[in-house]
Amino acid sequence: KPSLHPHQISQLLERYEQQPRSLKPGWDQRLLILTSYLTKSALDRCVELGVRALAENGNGYIRFARFLYEKFAPQKAPERSSQSSIFSAKASRLVRAMLARYPEPWNQSDLAKSIGVSPGYVSALVSRMLDADYIRRGQDKLRVVDPNRLLDDWSSRYRFDRHKRSRFAMSMGEYLQGLRKFQQEMRRQSIRFAFTGWSAAYLKASYGMPDSIVAYVDRLTMDIPFQAFHPVENQGNVLLLLPHDEGVFQFTDTGEFGETVADVQCYLDLMGLPGRASEQAEILREKRLTFEVPNGQQ
Image (cartoon, rainbow, N blue to C red; front, side, top):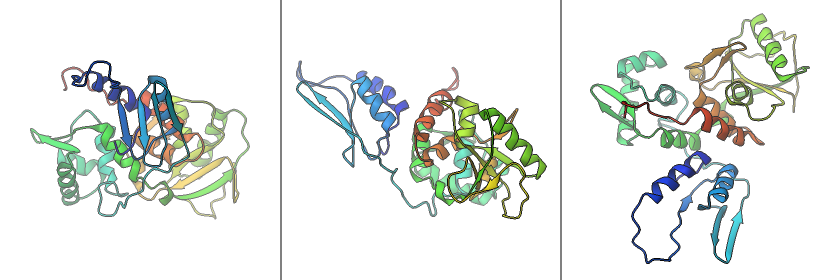
């Protein structure tokens, strides 16, 4: 596997146990997964389920009767060029759309209109995704083949550092109070925003209490007279992101505190944030990105 995340462990184990055995009785035939990238939460799940895994940098868990190997050192997801790729900033609008509406299929012309790009550009991207077997065409509709594989490949190529980041400090009591205060400030300045990272995850699938507010904004300059917070060079508890591409504002959810990015976008951004954000990403994925297909739509 190019990368290994907790939600995949049980799935792989179940598929493995359904395979016929050909080795001699008594031989140790437990699953071993080789991967380029292994998250800490995935390693913990391997230990819990007794699944062996080994990453390229030596991270992993392998246990025999009288042998134990367990190692984890922080590892960045493998970086690959996204130029001329379906995972580049503008092109990934199509990927976001396919995953956000899964398992519903897309008509190609409707897809182009929905993501705001030309039909010719979508046609070229669709050809690449068909060649890579990310999607298939049937009855004039486009369907995702394996949403988990598509999301994992996007995650391994995603460049969070391409968004322009500005930090601010704001006084707030409870976290929800802070979200409300932030919402009011954005309305005062007529700025469109969409919560992402810790903030969106807190509203979608909370895991602990965040200490910062993270949001995309459609404009950001130093002369905006913010009243609720002030700029800081480091730290701060408000992180504003001016997106590399406006596609992050597509397929958002709207709730009491304003817009939140699509679940897949929130997952990608959490994987790009430091600290325990990757753990929150896995919780979000387990709760909201299971990609289940309703009966009758297989």
